[in-house]
Image 1 (spheres, rainbow, N blue to C red):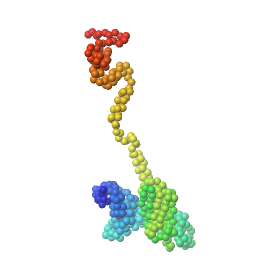
Image 2 (image 1 turned 120 degrees about the vertical axis):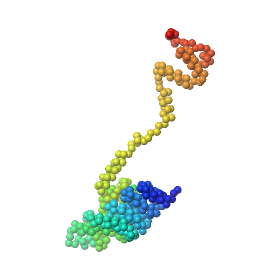
Image 3 (image 1 turned 180 degrees about the horizontal axis):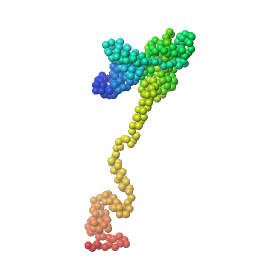
Image 4 (image 1 turned 60 degrees about the vertical axis):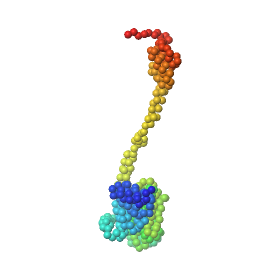
Length: 365
């Protein structure tokens, strides 16, 4: 059995040959053998990027970072994937860390500049007033101060005018999506997470700071009762239970992506071959021959055809003496006698005999 190093070598060769799908498959085999090798995840992320499998690339890069936080190329690939997914905050965080680890790598500088251009146009969505009431007691006190001399609508406007200060990322499995909000050292009672049929609502409130809100409309529906979250020292990890086992091309709902995915699914359904008409059919010729013979045997014939069939069957099943007797008697009697007894016809000439009620005549030429 090949080792993970040998399989990884073949995967890299496939990558160089532009066989990116094969490279992904081979890296997956290597990962099964060495699940704690950060390089394998980072290299598979690069292959996924070539195939434009952006969510898979981001997930692999995140896993590589989890195993080895000092791997610069993992941050580069995560930043690249997240930028293509439109997750610019997550991308910027990854790229900044990567740039600090590889200060002479100009790719980080270029991508960070591009990322900043996108973030300059970023406008946070309006937060409903119901979210403000979910904050902790400490945050609520801050909100009360902000309400002095203004209405609630003005207060919400003030809160949402500040750009979110936490980044987020996600990866998925067939049955769930794991969303990570990178919020370090936040007390659990300052975090409120709620689940809707297709909504995730996260509110983080810190004393003397504006609240952070993350309330995306999710790409697919979830099962709220099965969703859960955990507040860790460096992040908030949220697990969304999918209502359907389908791949989410993005975390947030997009009409364009949803329509494209639906068209692709319908196209695949239309192209799916109908069983069994499209399957190659194998013929059992021995069975077919036996079937034909059986049908011939059971076929009922009338008149001369029936008599001939009977004679054929008798002749086919006869021994040598019987066949000699049949041939001799039939020929010598001009077809009027058919005997199977060689001892009777073998020593004499068989005379022609007319059937009852008929007269035998000789033809004259």
